[in-house]
Image (cartoon, rainbow over all chains, first blue to last red; front, side):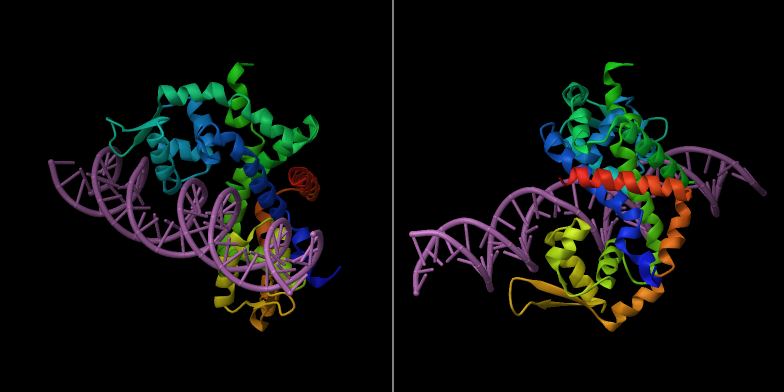
Length: 144
Length: 144
DNA sequence: CTCAATTAAATTGTGTACAATATAATGGAA
DNA sequence: TTCCATTATATTGTACACAATTTAATTGAG
């Protein structure tokens, strides 16, 4: 064991996290392309399909993203006709995001996406479950 | 269990991977700032500390990055005085990357980085080991 | 009620990422 | 030897991601 071994790429936990994250997002690209979505937009749609009319802030807290990322993202989704951004009447500071009919219809077309990409991971259900649990534990620890 | 449950954010494996990756990189930023490095530049330095004089291509295959990312990254690192980019004499297509003395000295100053950031993860050694193994398994499956 | 502090979005600037394309050097087949 | 396919890097264009700042609306202490 050498002094500088702690600085070897192979000894980092963060690197495979960073690399695997990027690589799996790449698997989504061709699949989501057919729906007219980028990966980040797909994440936003998943939140909105689960319940729209939420604010940029609420969306951001679920996705770990801020307005600097979301504002242009949502504008682009609005231009594509998937969502509508509307200033809240009760509190003009807040922008609420609503799905259009087209955005709502996209849900059906996206149903196959998780399995299509999930197959690429080639993990056993048990491994996937373990990984999921560890990642959420880490994520919670990091945002404390 | 509802039809659309597969599209819930909470049922995705990819999302905590994406989110945890981003969150842990954020922990590096203030630490690496003192060394004058970004996170991606730090990854590149780890590879180079382990052995410099390698090509852009070799560096990219270790980091899962292409020349579109690495060329500007390495130019910026060269401007800061950490590396030198030199066309290979035997094969003019190849650019080899060498550490400067300043770049080499940075290694000592970076020794504390992994532990400083590692503490934020707050995982037991066993959990970290499990996560590491699963992430590399996933990474290998994805790049097959 | 009033104004300073707070809050929500938007904007600005920097730095990745990567697909697609361009450029230039190399190597191999005929 | 010639030239076509391949290879390595660079460039271009698009899309995040986030820190820092700005703008505008709201709230709460006095």
